[in-house]
Image (cartoon, rainbow, N blue to C red):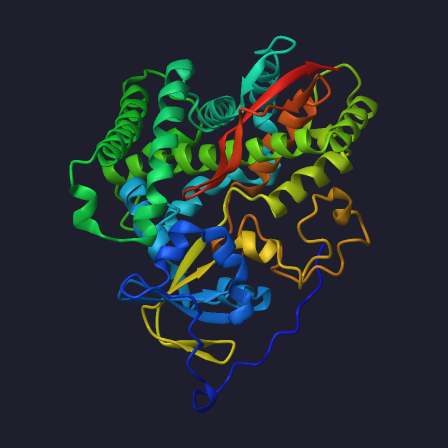
Length: 455
């Protein structure tokens, strides 16, 4: 789908220089104020200042990478690890699970969970995905106003929990987890950009709500683990694998690590897939001609029966709709890394311990990489059309050894849901909805309401 970018040779130390400072800083807050007030616009304009620029977040200097080839260099280099303001903030939620750990711990944790995400075993989740998608599509009556914000979270949580943890009390858990996720992920972005630790301990209503949501997520993980430990028969699933995992010394991993891994399975995947589903349905309501093409394609391939994983490979336009939605409105819109030692990137010096930020949203909407970059055009991913997209200009699941292990699983989830829902329902936009982006750790519509009209 992509072509190689020209990658410059590493610059010798004598030729390395300081990255330029981005414009628009505010005394005292630096660029943090812009990242709070207009983060999407600010990041989209940063490449005008350079392929790599310095930002000031209060007293701290952070480096922003804006060019695809430099993002690729960073993601595939051993000089950078998971870290920076995003992951420091997520530590509060995820602890030291596979998403936030580094080094031997990360490799061991990834080896434990990877078998459950391998492409060849995802077919084992087909039944659950189809059941949940059919139930998702059957919840509405003609003319209903669908609260897509809550519905999308609910179905994503249910799929994830049933596939990987085989949780029986799924109705109660899905409701509680969806509510807590919305609160916590919404409050984390401000903590990432403005790291005023003592301020967030003040007894303000928003801080108390955040703390309650966070406590609920951790309480849910404890309940899930306790139920599995008490079960007389333990299914062969990811949760059982976590409970039986060994550390580097061959000893059982401690409880906190199991807890953190359960949180890492339940929360980021459900949040990102739920948010992405919202954007896809919003885009199809905004572009009904694309929804009609999806419906016609599914009916021609699947007929009147339920979709199968074998069908997904034949749904070319449906898959292109998902890919284009991931490009133009990605749920994962900002990511960070940390330099392990002094190094260089694009000829600029990167100090040891420096935090680096990059935005998949800005990269994937860059007019230097895409013609009609703001148009929703699934046909840009047809064979032959996508060859001019620079490598690393499209990276919704990241790259390198920290590429999201759930990429195939997530694409299968979205494919099954679209192929089940769109042939049955046409969605119309409603004026009372708030489709503007809610900027948090993930990106989603603030309150998406759509009218369900039967086809």
